[in-house]
Each structure stands twice: as C-alpha cells, then as structure tokens.
Length: 481
Image 1 (cartoon, one colour):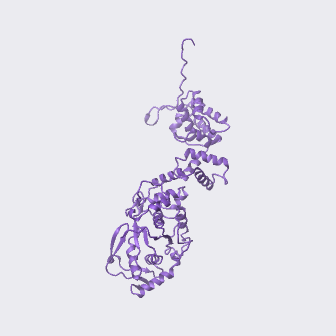
Image 2 (cartoon, helix red, strand yellow):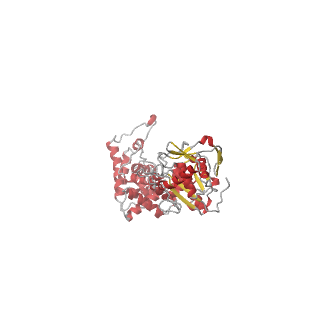
Image 3 (tube, one colour):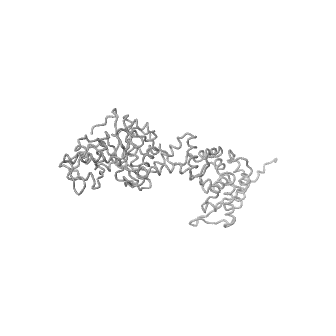
C-alpha cells in the first residue's frame, strides 16, 4: 500500500457495537482513528454498529459515547452531532442496505437461497493492501459464498460495513486485526456495487499479560471500570497510544494534541500489544502528580463526596485536610481510588498490628511512653506543625527509650506499619480523637490480652526482644564538680 498523504484531510471512522462500556481494545482503535483525523485536519466519524443488537433493551451505544467523551475523543459526525452521511446507527439504515442488496441481485452478484441473500464469490484471489500488515492474499475458494441478508431481511455485518464505509466516503478503515478476514469480503462487495474499495490498516490485537485476547468480560477490559476506579483520561490515553504504536522520541507524557501532531500509521505494528495495568497505574500516578494543586484537591474532594466521605459543599477545614493528605500521600497513590482507600483507613478508629510488632510493644516503659504521648496530644490546641521529631524522642527519653524506638512505637500504634508519611502530617490527618482511641486500643490490648510478660522466642525459635528501656548514662565524676 502506498504511503498515506498526511497533507490531505482524511475521513476515518470508529464503528462499535453497543455495549455497557468501551472495550480497551476498541478504545485504542478509536484513539488511533481520532489521531489520524486530527493529524490530517480530516473528519472523525463515529458509527454505532447495532444491527445485531437492534431492538435489544438498552442497546443504544450511549455508554460507548460516554466513554469516548471521557477520553477526550470528540467526533465530527455521528450520533448526537449528525452529518450529511447519516444516520449513523446501522439500525436506522435498513433501507440503505436493502437498496444495495437489490442492486447486487439485479446485477447477478448475489442470489437468493432458503430465504436469505447470498453473495456470489467469483474464482480468484483478493489482495488486501494493508497499511500495517502489508499485502495479504485471500483465496476466494477459502472464502466461499456468504450471506449478506438474513432470511429475516436484515443485513449482515459485511454488507452493512462495506456499504456504510463507501457511502460515508471513509478514506481509511483503521481497525484491529480481528477484522482482517472481513476485508476481502468487503472489498468484493464494494467492487460488485461499483465502489472503489477503501484503504485498510489492521493493527495488532490488544492482549492481557498472558498474551490472550481481552474479552469484553475481562476485569481489565472496560474503560468505565477504570474511570470509576479513579484513573485519569490523560493517563489512559497515553497508555493506549503506546499499544502497538512507537512514536519518535522517549516522551511518554504527551497530550492528545501532541500525540496527533506525530501520529502515523507507518509506526503502528501488527503484532499483539499487552495492556499492562501496572504500567497504566504508573502513568496515572505521574498524571496525578502533574496536576495543579487545586485540581488534585478538587478531584479528591469530588470522589469523597460521591462516596459520602465529605459533605457538599466542602468546608474550608476539609479542604485544608485534603491538602495535608496530598502532602502526605499524593506522591504515593496511583489512582484516586487508592486515595479513597487511604482516606478510609485514616477514618478507622483502630488498626491491625502484626502479632510480632505488638509483642515488641509489650513492655511497661512503652506503655508509659504511649500514655504520655496521649497526654501530650491532649494538651495541644492544634496538631499541625508540631515539633514531633524533637518532642516525641524527648518524651521517650523520660522512659529510657531510644529516639528510633520511640518514633517507631508511635507509628506502629497509630498505623500498624513501619512505613508511611511523616508523623507531622499523620497527626493532623488522624486528629485528636483517633490518636487517643488508637493508642488506647493498643494499650488495652497489651494489658488485657496477654499482659506484660514478654515472649522469649519468635518464629523458628529465634530469640525475640521487646523494645527495652535504656538506662540513662551516669554523670561523669570530673574533678572540681
């Protein structure tokens, strides 16, 4: 196939069956077509191929349009926008297909049998000049005659697609290679109807980590699921764009207009591409960090309001709390959904402490220290900007605890983990009441669970020690004191 002329405006189309959500493989196809249209200053046509779903309840394609809008893929012609080549739902084009079937019957290219209309495949070979896969030859003997109108009178997919692509003046049919076998049938139909065949380009499949085709039922197959999980459209677009397409340069964080400026079919591959959720999560984390602070705050506030974790409108104090949350966790979470999980954990009144970590806290000095920390918190009018790196070790020293042991004891009592944001951020996030409750729960569990008797050995008989008090060093006996 000759190289595309990117200086000429191209009409391209995205045709999808109606579904509850846009499949990620279909989303990649839609994106490639949108980029090609925008690169050439052409026209992006959206069509709903709902012949099989015609009359089915809820089979309107509205979810497909919703997901396209979320991705930022606006269309120039199609449902809701109209256009001179409409209608753009196949269920509304029955008369167009019937007229073309009658033309094929009249010129002898088709015949009726058992109430259906069959296309008569002549002897020979059809070569699909594919812009991605190169020339692919199909022996007509292997194709055989095929049905173009069912006994019910409805057109089949291949007739409808061939007619629509021709009458809508589509220049390039860019789609997934699961449709490659349809191309020779649609070329034969177009020629029999007197139309010049379209130019074709079939990109490799989108597969999962096991190199299996992503079915519509796959848990990672739907755009709507990622939207509801808190992914950003920019991150999804950046990931989809790199599934089978390799642009010049190493920059992965391109916007839609930037992608459109450099897109070309020649750099689209025909081999399968893996939809890697972990890579998408990394893209999304980068996109979140790149957001202006007010947008990041509004994103989290909106998600909290939708899940009833925050009233609407949000009070100023709540927005300050979200700012603190972003300072504490904003660089760590990959999605807004993960942020909500962290927020829910911060709202809990108790935490689960691993058994051996609880054993490390099982000493009188640690209990006294945690009680003193509770008193310290109770005395503070404001938990922001406390000098905890100084104050907590100083309190711990009163009970013979080393600085590291004191800080780790507080973190473990409050979070059940060794890792996390600085305590100076964690304290205002938890707030006075939750800090008191969490420390109280740990102290109560130790005292009323097994008491203060430490265990001597851990798993595998390894000697085990609690956090021990370190006696203060005796004063030096220098002469003259």
